[in-house]
Amino acid sequence: MGLFTKDIETLHDLFLHQLQDIYYAENQITKALPKMIDKATSPELKQGFETHLRETEGQIARLEQAFEALGEKAKAVKCPAIDGIIKEANEVAGEVADKAVLDAALIAAAQAVEHYEITRYGTLIAWARQLGHTQVAGLLEETLAEEKATDDKLTTLAESKANADAELATA
Image (tube, rainbow, N blue to C red; front, top):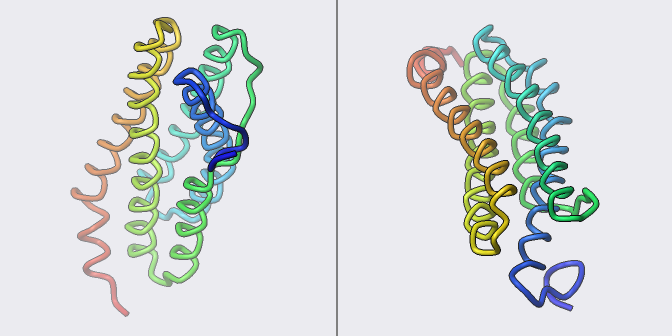
């Protein structure tokens, strides 16, 4: 046995394992986003998180379609990476007293999640194409586009308001 729950012998095995990994991650994200919504003080940031929560629920449904297309049961395997990113976000948010600084921290945490997802989905799409799973690749491409759009929105929010507000915060 290697680093994973069972030996991975083929690209298909690796693909399936990473699909289970991102399935776990998306489910963990749906648990983390309501907490981020509650902590966010900017109405725009709250709205962005609410929108992304709905998108994430759709992404989970898409992953379930992908498993079905592969003739597999939707199953999650623990993803230490997303657990670590979420844990760090909670720790940092718990240490920030100023509301403006907290919003900047929440944006940074959300972008760490988005960047992880963008990386995962990009790899999964390449493997799906290599393995001839065109329907699955299409489903994953929809999600990747949403993840990139969310990251862009977070960048715009940070650069247009949140970072400047955080800089002006008093200690």
